[in-house]
Image (cartoon, rainbow, N blue to C red; front, side, top):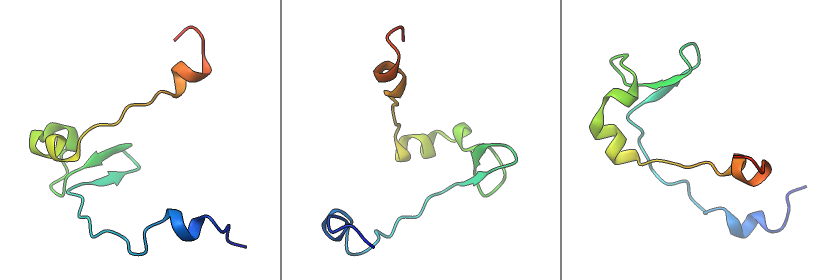
Length: 63
């Protein structure tokens, strides 16, 4: 059964996004098509932005 709210929360179409890297599970990092780690390419870093996790500070008083 699909929850009613999911009909409205998710976009009707998936956005057409091309990511210039793929995840390599053996290395456990994102890699570029030429095999270099994605973190080495400044253009990729600037284009994709960053994320911040606040899970630790919300679950542990000493973080």
